[in-house]
Length: 286
Picture 1 (cartoon, rainbow, N blue to C red):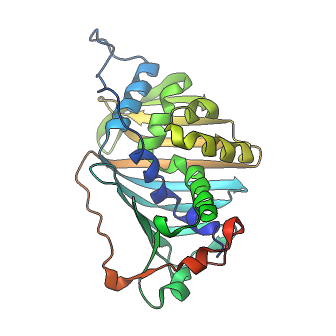
Picture 2 (picture 1 turned 60 degrees about the vertical axis):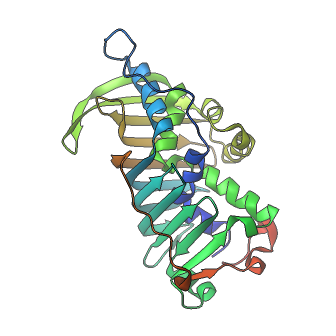
């Protein structure tokens, strides 16, 4: 498995890094200040503000891509943004670049490292269950490759993607329904990728623009379901590009609730040696 493939498969967990880099400047209000129900555009903006302030989220996630992003994966995401970044992604079903991953995979992400559990890594783990990739040990070329793949996977966090919708246009109400017994309003709209990128932390914008430009992605369309407090309950995003396209479906199962993510004990972890990552941006055989 090439270096470029591995971060792609851990995309859902790595996107937690984006959410951790976003800080709120103000508390969201529940409406326009007049007591009236928010308009469709205001509802999306309120949802973005709530997502920016969120401390945690759990969700089921499925991703399908075509073109240079050909892949399919589904599973669950548990993400703690504050007080310390942690995320866990369990993907029983994974295929990418025409290859399936037997047994799927699990990854755990912190601000210092990513821990991977998958059968394809057995040669690197020496029989241990987990492989640890410390971010501090990576060379500049490898950091750049992983950074680009993290940015490619930005849609997989419902917290981040909801923030990106704040600049959406053509937002309108589709209808009302219930999700998990909770009344929700369904909205749809679209946004230009350049507008969405400007809402990311300044340190990330240049690399994201480069990756989106490479894929030819200029816009995205979405459907989002919000409860009466303008909290996201479900989100479907489709990115459109000349070289690749992807659709991500996220069903939020909890938000701002305590989550439990356990870092594997050292006895079950093999640390990826620096020599395995020394081949630069062309990628080594992982």
